[in-house]
Each structure stands twice: as structure tokens, then as C-alpha cells.
Length: 325
Image (tube, rainbow, N blue to C red; front, side, top):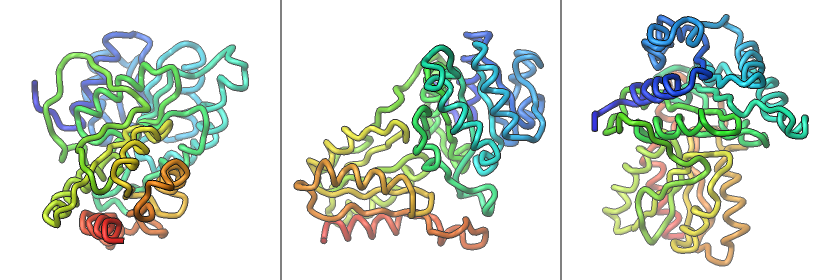
């Protein structure tokens, strides 16, 4: 298998989807001949023409409204929001139109073929307008799916599954992994299941749950914990909505402890939903409180980014606190 970085894997997935189905369209700000600000759509316009890969005006609400209209008419739009931080002008279109199309019509029409891609998260010194993690806002919205890959292999398989899924999908791509994360990726077509978490490492003392770029941070924390003699089970949630409650609960039944980490602020972050659900299901099995290791309840800082982000040392500290509670 060839080695790809995450950008190449995403581009490969888009290429396969567009080659297979002429209804698949890619559009957004600068995605045409420029290939997008991160080059995720490189050469797609050259290969499939201006009618299927094209630039839009700088108006996010318009991009998503246009995508809703295309999807309602039977196209399969894959729209890019240049940074996830810019998705907020389109919030009304996503939560009041995209998510509710099927429901409000009694299933007479839908926009299930719609996929929204967006680079998200910190780690590139982008400051507060280019570093946010807004997944929890959309996890509160029935009718959507929210997917976040951790590496190139996952990115390709999950993106192809998202494009072909019968529900609208928000596909958040951890931008600091675009070129930093590399690995073997099959050239052929494949899909990974949405709504299913993956146990990436089995253990017996504590369960760690994360998604996206935090999975690499968790791995480094686990290396430190193992030097302390602590056995860690690691779960990549992969899909935030719907999230795989059963896999996490089964793990906590075994380990009795849970640490959840994400880059987004602590208050209202998705770790809180996981903690609440797990204490409801696993209360009598818990040996310590569910721990959260998250970003801070502040705007995302520029000069203090390293202090803001939940790193491997903070996660290691939470693991130790959980095990020695």
C-alpha cells in the first residue's frame, strides 16, 4: 500500500467518489484550480471540470444553502468550509434546514446526500479564528452526523462512507494532522462504518476516549502511564453523532475508570455528554469519577496555545488521578 498523508487520503477519497458518481460535486472557497487553502481538492477541477469542482463566493451561509438545494434535487454535494471557525454564519442553514429537511417533510424529501468538510482544531498557531473545535454545537442537533478522523487511513474510509451515507454529515478534519499524520492507505475504494468507535488498544485499568488529533496525544500519555504500571484501554470515538455508547460502556464495565479528552472548552464540551451517559450506565462499576481533560473556558489563544491545549502530560496526570483516586 502507498504511504499517504491525511490531505492526500482525503483528496484520494474525493477523487474516487467523483469518478464513481457524476452527481458528486465539490465546491467552496478556493477549492478549484487553487486546490483549497490546504490543497485537499488539488487537481479535481482539472480532472472533472468546472461544473463539478468550483469556487464559491466568500459566504458560508450561501455555500450551505446552495448545498442544501443541490442535495434536495438529487445531487451529492461535498461542500468545504475553509476553516471550521467560519461555519458559524452557516449555523442556521445547518441546524434549521440541513438537519430538519427530512423530518419536516415526513420523509417526502431530504438532503441526505450532503457532506460538509471543514479543517478544524488547533496546533498550527492559528489564533482564535483558525483553531476552534465546534463539534459539540452540532452534536446537539438531531438529523446530522458528525465525523472526525484520526489518521489518513481513517480519513479516506470515513469520508467515502460519509459521502455515501443517507444522512447529512459534518466531516471535521484535524488540520494539524494534514501533513503530520502519514501511513499506509489502500489505493482502492473502501469504507469505514459511521457510528462505531474503535478500540485501538486494549487494557484493564482505565479507559481513555478521544477523537481526531487527540488520539496521538493519548498515545503519548499511555506510554507514560505504562511506565507507571498502568494498563490503558484506548478508544477512538470517530463519530461524535451518533456516538458509540455501547463500546465505551463495555470498556468501562471492564476497567472501572474513564478519562475523556478533547480540544474544545470544558463547559458544554462533548466529554460532558459522555461522562453523563457512562455514569448512568456504569455507576456501580466506577472506581473513580469520570475525568475530563479539555481546552480551557477561554477564547482560543495565540501565544498561549500550548498552555491551552490538553497535552499528554495533562492526560497522564488525569490517568494517575483516576487510578489512585
